[in-house]
Image 1: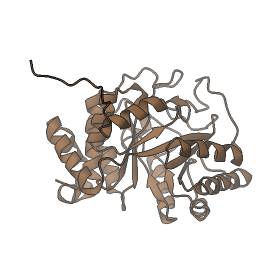
Image 2: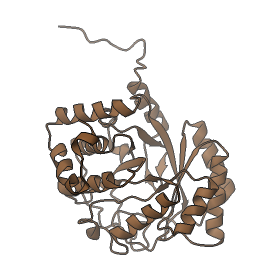
Image 3: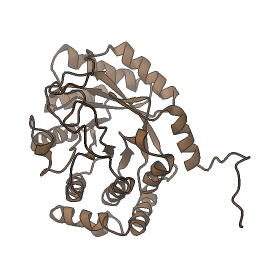
Image 4: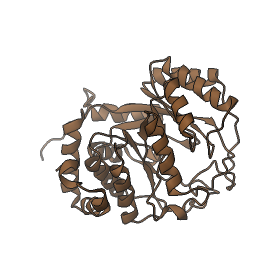
Length: 328
């Protein structure tokens, strides 16, 4: 059962997403993996790299963020990197296997002038390496979105984070509609969208499903849907939130895959806390991208050797001397 059959009207989206989320786990996995194989090669896992190009001092008060000026997290502020620094980092990422290079700056609104012009040069530098380029710079004007497109940018990341109803509990310095306005500006400029959310911020199952339904109702749907697990950073309001159960993550990935069958569903922040088996289950449920590198902006990520082992397990590269289970 694919999106065309189960998701006829945006107004019914939350209820349909919730029905899917509450299916018996194996039934949900079967539907999600079937949808995944219809549109994707199950062995195609895109590797991405995310670099913080301007760190800390953000005026937003997002409850999860280590870079907010409202929270004392010990993050050292870093000015905007040079184009040369970004080009070198992108070259190293490509050598490590990344096909997509993502750049994040801790701004509420992308600035005008020299700093924005430098970001445009960064985009051109990444594209010169024959890599996909994605940025997240905060809110955009329509003209800024057009300039990014003209520079060669492929995608703009701007997450919804959670449901419209739960959003005011997480952020007070901007609205949900502010987020959607930036997504519209990026789409109208011809950029693809990278837009997802974060699990583990005190939201309900209904909130998770409402967020997925909101994403699925976008026309066209986001080409990229990152699913993040909260990295509970000391000093943030969400520092004491309990971790999300693996099956809850897997259910979220599976519903995202069914509702948005053609999208890249990205297993993003929080992978460092997942076992290899948990990650494989999420990939089976429909995730088909991971972020490599030791950091995602300012938080820890899985190391390269772990990712190599994960991908080897996925592709069946079993060592010749691996033990074989025998019947008793």
